[in-house]
Length: 166
Image 1 (tube, rainbow, N blue to C red):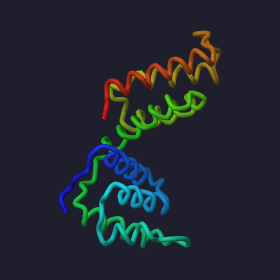
Image 2 (image 1 turned 180 degrees about the vertical axis):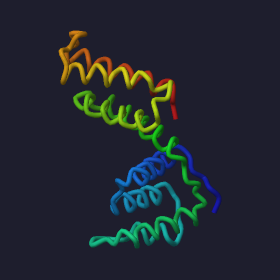
Image 3 (image 1 turned 90 degrees about the horizontal axis):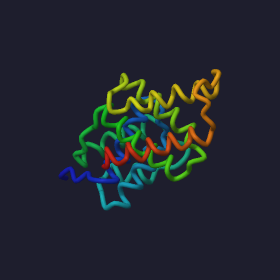
Image 4 (image 1 turned 135 degrees about the horizontal axis):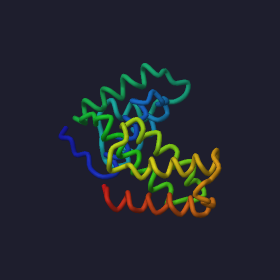
Protein backbone atom coordinates (compact mmCIF):
# COMPACT_ATOMS: atom_id res chain seq x y z
CA UNK A 1 0.00 0.00 0.00
CA UNK A 2 1.27 3.50 -0.81
CA UNK A 3 2.03 5.82 2.06
CA UNK A 4 -0.86 8.29 2.01
CA UNK A 5 -0.16 9.86 5.39
CA UNK A 6 -1.37 13.44 5.51
CA UNK A 7 -2.75 15.86 8.03
CA UNK A 8 -4.19 14.42 11.21
CA UNK A 9 -2.71 10.97 10.58
CA UNK A 10 0.79 12.46 10.43
CA UNK A 11 0.15 14.13 13.76
CA UNK A 12 -1.27 11.00 15.40
CA UNK A 13 1.58 8.85 14.12
CA UNK A 14 4.21 11.41 15.14
CA UNK A 15 2.76 11.73 18.62
CA UNK A 16 2.77 7.95 19.02
CA UNK A 17 6.39 7.81 17.86
CA UNK A 18 7.22 10.66 20.27
CA UNK A 19 5.86 8.55 23.13
CA UNK A 20 7.88 5.59 21.83
CA UNK A 21 11.06 7.71 21.73
CA UNK A 22 10.37 8.87 25.29
CA UNK A 23 9.70 5.29 26.47
CA UNK A 24 6.32 6.56 27.62
CA UNK A 25 4.07 4.55 25.35
CA UNK A 26 1.37 2.25 26.67
CA UNK A 27 -0.34 -0.63 24.86
CA UNK A 28 -3.58 1.36 24.63
CA UNK A 29 -1.73 4.16 22.78
CA UNK A 30 -1.05 1.70 19.94
CA UNK A 31 -4.63 0.46 19.90
CA UNK A 32 -6.06 4.00 19.90
CA UNK A 33 -3.72 4.86 17.02
CA UNK A 34 -4.95 1.81 15.09
CA UNK A 35 -8.58 2.78 15.67
CA UNK A 36 -7.96 6.33 14.42
CA UNK A 37 -6.19 4.95 11.36
CA UNK A 38 -9.16 2.72 10.58
CA UNK A 39 -11.52 5.67 11.05
CA UNK A 40 -9.49 7.46 8.38
CA UNK A 41 -9.87 4.62 5.86
CA UNK A 42 -6.53 2.88 6.38
CA UNK A 43 -6.59 -0.86 6.38
CA UNK A 44 -4.14 -3.70 6.68
CA UNK A 45 -4.18 -7.17 8.18
CA UNK A 46 -2.09 -6.21 11.22
CA UNK A 47 -3.85 -2.85 11.71
CA UNK A 48 -7.18 -4.68 11.90
CA UNK A 49 -5.82 -7.12 14.47
CA UNK A 50 -4.13 -4.36 16.49
CA UNK A 51 -7.36 -2.38 16.67
CA UNK A 52 -9.26 -5.39 17.99
CA UNK A 53 -6.90 -6.33 20.85
CA UNK A 54 -8.37 -6.03 24.35
CA UNK A 55 -7.19 -6.25 27.98
CA UNK A 56 -5.14 -7.94 29.24
CA UNK A 57 -2.60 -6.69 26.73
CA UNK A 58 0.85 -8.07 26.10
CA UNK A 59 3.12 -5.14 25.14
CA UNK A 60 5.31 -7.37 22.97
CA UNK A 61 2.33 -8.63 20.99
CA UNK A 62 0.92 -5.11 20.62
CA UNK A 63 4.26 -3.68 19.47
CA UNK A 64 4.68 -6.56 17.01
CA UNK A 65 1.33 -5.83 15.38
CA UNK A 66 2.18 -2.12 15.34
CA UNK A 67 5.50 -2.75 13.55
CA UNK A 68 3.73 -5.02 11.07
CA UNK A 69 0.98 -2.46 10.45
CA UNK A 70 3.53 0.30 9.87
CA UNK A 71 5.32 -1.92 7.37
CA UNK A 72 2.11 -2.99 5.62
CA UNK A 73 0.99 0.66 5.33
CA UNK A 74 4.45 1.80 4.17
CA UNK A 75 4.60 4.41 6.92
CA UNK A 76 8.01 6.01 7.29
CA UNK A 77 9.10 6.46 10.88
CA UNK A 78 9.45 10.17 11.64
CA UNK A 79 12.64 11.43 13.26
CA UNK A 80 12.65 12.35 16.94
CA UNK A 81 12.83 16.02 15.98
CA UNK A 82 9.79 15.71 13.70
CA UNK A 83 7.87 13.94 16.45
CA UNK A 84 8.82 16.54 19.03
CA UNK A 85 7.81 19.40 16.72
CA UNK A 86 4.42 17.78 16.07
CA UNK A 87 3.94 17.29 19.80
CA UNK A 88 4.77 20.94 20.54
CA UNK A 89 2.24 21.88 17.86
CA UNK A 90 -0.44 19.77 19.55
CA UNK A 91 0.42 21.12 23.00
CA UNK A 92 0.16 24.67 21.65
CA UNK A 93 -3.34 23.85 20.41
CA UNK A 94 -4.22 22.48 23.86
CA UNK A 95 -3.16 25.77 25.44
CA UNK A 96 -5.62 27.63 23.21
CA UNK A 97 -8.37 25.10 23.93
CA UNK A 98 -8.04 25.48 27.70
CA UNK A 99 -6.00 28.36 29.03
CA UNK A 100 -6.39 27.05 32.60
CA UNK A 101 -3.74 24.41 31.80
CA UNK A 102 -1.38 26.84 30.08
CA UNK A 103 1.28 26.85 32.80
CA UNK A 104 1.50 23.05 33.05
CA UNK A 105 1.57 22.68 29.27
CA UNK A 106 4.23 25.39 28.94
CA UNK A 107 6.45 23.32 31.24
CA UNK A 108 5.88 20.27 29.01
CA UNK A 109 6.83 22.29 25.95
CA UNK A 110 9.94 23.57 27.69
CA UNK A 111 11.03 19.99 28.47
CA UNK A 112 10.77 19.16 24.77
CA UNK A 113 12.68 22.33 23.83
CA UNK A 114 15.36 21.28 26.30
CA UNK A 115 15.52 17.78 24.72
CA UNK A 116 15.92 19.41 21.31
CA UNK A 117 18.87 21.42 22.66
CA UNK A 118 17.13 24.81 22.55
CA UNK A 119 16.55 25.45 18.84
CA UNK A 120 16.42 29.11 17.94
CA UNK A 121 12.84 29.01 16.65
CA UNK A 122 11.66 27.74 20.07
CA UNK A 123 13.72 30.05 22.28
CA UNK A 124 10.68 31.95 23.49
CA UNK A 125 9.56 28.81 25.34
CA UNK A 126 12.85 28.91 27.24
CA UNK A 127 12.16 32.54 28.18
CA UNK A 128 8.68 31.58 29.33
CA UNK A 129 10.11 28.80 31.50
CA UNK A 130 12.40 31.36 33.13
CA UNK A 131 9.40 33.60 33.88
CA UNK A 132 7.51 30.62 35.28
CA UNK A 133 10.37 29.55 37.50
CA UNK A 134 10.87 33.09 38.75
CA UNK A 135 7.13 33.38 39.43
CA UNK A 136 6.87 30.02 41.21
CA UNK A 137 10.21 29.65 42.95
CA UNK A 138 12.02 32.96 42.79
CA UNK A 139 11.45 36.48 43.92
CA UNK A 140 9.29 37.32 40.89
CA UNK A 141 11.65 40.12 39.93
CA UNK A 142 9.58 40.90 36.85
CA UNK A 143 6.43 41.26 39.03
CA UNK A 144 4.37 39.12 36.66
CA UNK A 145 0.91 38.05 37.74
CA UNK A 146 -0.48 34.62 36.96
CA UNK A 147 -2.86 36.24 34.46
CA UNK A 148 0.04 37.96 32.69
CA UNK A 149 1.99 34.69 32.57
CA UNK A 150 -0.94 32.85 31.04
CA UNK A 151 -1.43 35.67 28.53
CA UNK A 152 2.26 35.42 27.57
CA UNK A 153 1.98 31.64 27.16
CA UNK A 154 -1.22 31.92 25.10
CA UNK A 155 0.35 34.55 22.86
CA UNK A 156 3.39 32.37 22.23
CA UNK A 157 1.18 29.36 21.52
CA UNK A 158 -0.70 31.46 18.93
CA UNK A 159 2.57 32.70 17.45
CA UNK A 160 3.98 29.18 17.32
CA UNK A 161 0.90 27.84 15.55
CA UNK A 162 0.95 30.74 13.11
CA UNK A 163 4.64 30.17 12.28
CA UNK A 164 4.33 26.39 12.07
CA UNK A 165 0.92 25.68 10.63
CA UNK A 166 0.80 21.97 9.83
